[in-house]
Length: 430
Ligand code: CMC
Image 1 (cartoon, protein in one colour):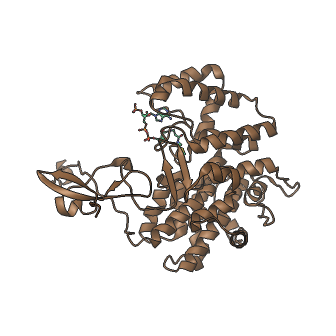
Image 2 (cartoon, rainbow, N blue to C red; image 1 turned 180 degrees about the vertical axis):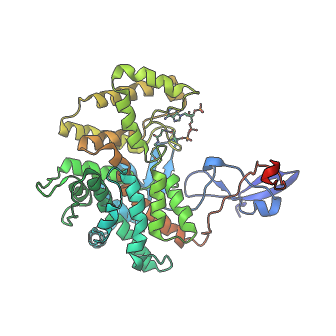
Image 3 (cartoon, protein in one colour; image 1 turned 120 degrees about the vertical axis):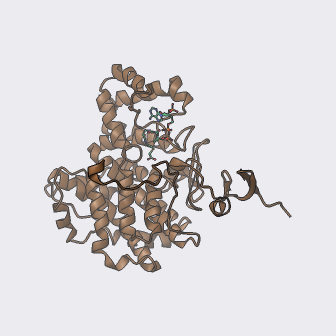
């Protein structure tokens, strides 16, 4: 019989055997669940750099090899052969669909693309200059006030309906947030269009002029969505899981994910990256910004570079770079100043000792912003597009968590370094 794998930990002279859990692929994990009860110690891991928070069968990343798989399928193969809705099916149900399954899924998603008419009024409560992410956090959270028939997390049918509703309605909500900020009327979804084309049309059509979607742009948008669809236990997905672990309703959980995604270290990086390229402005100013990025006393970072997990290259960035070339060639914008800065910055950073040594490569957001800008989106829409794309990942992970018998409310402990017990002092004596 094979010997059970364990890790030995010695705490204050006493040895403890901790089980080692083996994944299908990737590093083993030390199971420390009983450590506190037996040894009266916590583990300390701010930022969770060495902590696996759950078991999952959805997405696998090998940061050293630069690999990303959805349900075992490499992202490059999906990007070349699949499309966003098929990828959604794969992430949600674990297998690629048959023709019938795909047709049924397509029908279910497109039937839910409209939002409750009353929601239009809800948008009007926001200022026109609100960031679309702020509007989306509010509106998606408010879905639980509009769709009462799909908030019971203990009913599998309601969980399914809520999941489909979010995947179907997020593009509509993001496009409405955009239209509202532009002072233009909302454009209703059109169910004869594919997912990406429908979103582009809802953003760019106006009542006086329809928007004919270019197949190249639609394919590029579909790819952006596929590449962002899931990314294992990243910050926003962990947020969705943590919120969901208390039994919160799915719309509230995804709203929490959107709020987390907005940060510039996460999904907000695509907006921050393009703004940085514009701030740099001209190629001759690049050295100044590279110098700042290396300066320990300067908080400036090169946005769109580096990743917590990918320490070789970001496989999504590779595919995105190809898309960027196609889109820019189609739109004839392969020569503008921002693009020149981006290309030169990429070249310099890839050769610079500091970036090479710290393994800081352009990530997916470096190229996605360039594509989205060329398509005509303002930078404020970049992160909402990330949110649309990641919704399926959030939902798949949330459903997986609820079905997991090991699921418990997420409740980390802490290393308290505050004051010792002391007595209250009346204000007159302070
Ligand atoms: N520019 C300059 N230096 C950097 C950068 C950067 N973009 N990223 C990391 N470093 C340095 C950092 O200063 C640190 O140096 P030292 O070891 O001397 O203290 C070292 O590299 C390690 O950085 P870290 O902050 O410990 O790494 P992390 O894994 O905690 O952070 C990250 C990962 C993505 C937050 C970070 O690289 C970053 O802030 N990048 C810019 C923001 C960005 O593009 N985010 C999008 C990520 S991809 C989309 C997504 O999945 O959300």
